[in-house]
Image (cartoon, rainbow, N blue to C red):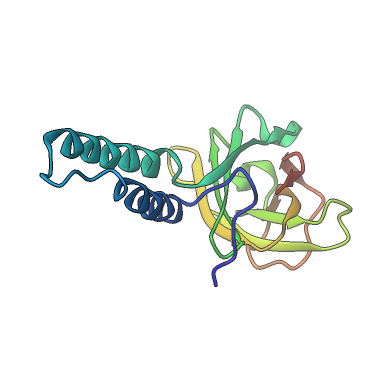
Length: 176
């Protein structure tokens, strides 16, 4: 049995499947013997409604805006956090207008995304971001944490195990 998303979050396929089953059971009570046109119209309307619900209820996502710290300059960072059916969180983090890490301090060449428990007792490097020629960076990754804080540091290497002191963006606590 697949785990359920938290209340208020529905996966489109599960929702549509459940509604289609209920509709089939309910509509069988009203089928006329002659297969009247009114029933066909109601059936088509129900199918369109189910398709609309699938599009609108395709996931449960939160938008998170990072707070820039002085090193970020005029850069911005945003994240889309979406709960998956297997109870992980997909993270889509985007940086724009950020300076090249080497400009901030010689020897720096990566931005690193970190996920931490709210008390910051457990911190995990969840990926590195490389700045492109348009001064943007992006990463798509996962975290199993239900309550967490995201922050981005500038580092000399992307595979560091503990964050350095130079934090450029920090997000508020995200919780499901």
